Image (cartoon, rainbow, N blue to C red; front, side, top):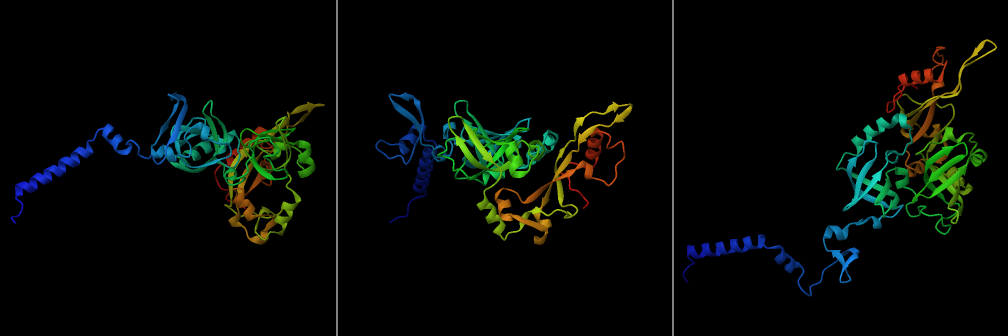
Length: 387
C-alpha cells in the first residue's frame, strides 16, 4: 500500500485545526447545550431568590463558586459564627475596615475590634498605622467573627479580637433565653460602657449584661470601675441570671470555686506577677497612655494657695512571659489559660507619679504639667529601656 500523500496529511491537519478552532469559538448557546442538555443531571444548584419567581419557579445558580460559598446572602450570616479567609476590601478614615465574606456580602470591623488590648483615643493614630501595615487592601485575614447582623439593612459588624475568636466557639451568647445560656458558665465579652454604677458587657447579637459596682466591690474589691475597666476591653464573666422578658442578663466577674480549684492545682507556669518583682529592661512595651485627671482646681484659703488635687495618670505596659522564670511568677493562673484567652503577656500599670524618685515642683503642680512630662518620656509602641 502506498504511503499517504503529503497533501492528504495537510488536509487532515487543517481539519483538526478547524475542529479545534470551532470548539474554541463555540457560541454560548452551544456551550449551554453541552453542559445542560435536556434530561441531564445537574450536580448541585443554589437558590438565589424566591421573591421574584417566574411562573412560581425560584431563580437559582449552578456556578461552582456560588454553590460552594459559605456566605451567599446577608441572611446566611449568623451572630457568633466564625468566618475564615476573608479579604480586606478597604480602610475608612475613622480606622474601621471593610472585608468581604462572600459574593456581594461585606462586613465592617471597627478599629477597637482589630486589637485585643483596649486603649483610648490618644493612641488612635498609632493603631491606625499598625492596622494599615498588618491588614493591607486585598490581603486575607485568617478569621473574623460576627457580632451583629441586620439583613434588612445589609449591615454586618465583625470582630477580629483573638480572645473572642478562641473562646465560646460552640456556645456563644446570642439571646436572653435562659434555655440557650448555661447559668454558672463563663463567657468572654466586650466592655461597652463603664460608669460609677458598674460595667456593661456586650456579647453577640447585641445581647448585653451588667455587673454592678457594688457587686464588684464585694467580690473583687474594686472601688471605682472607671479606674479598672475600659471600653473595648475583653473580660471573662459568669452568668448568674437571665430574664428573656425584660431582656436582662446579670453577670459576675468572679469565676466559680471549681474553676479556681482547677487553676490552683495546675502545674503550668503562671501569668500573674509577685509583688516586688523587678521587671527586666526592654521587657515592657507601652500600649497606651492614660492622662491624669483633675479632682479639684487650685484655690486660695485664708490667704494660702492650695494646689490642684488630681489623680495621677499611668502608662499601660505589656510584659512578655518569656522574660521570667517559673519561680518568679504567681501560680494562680496558668499559661494555658493565658493562651486560651489570647494573652501571652501580662498587662501592668506604670503611674506617672512613679517614674522618678524626685520631681521638680513645677512638674507635679498640676495634672496638665505631669501629663506633659510623662508624654515627653513615654511613647506608645516603644519599649522601656530600664528596669
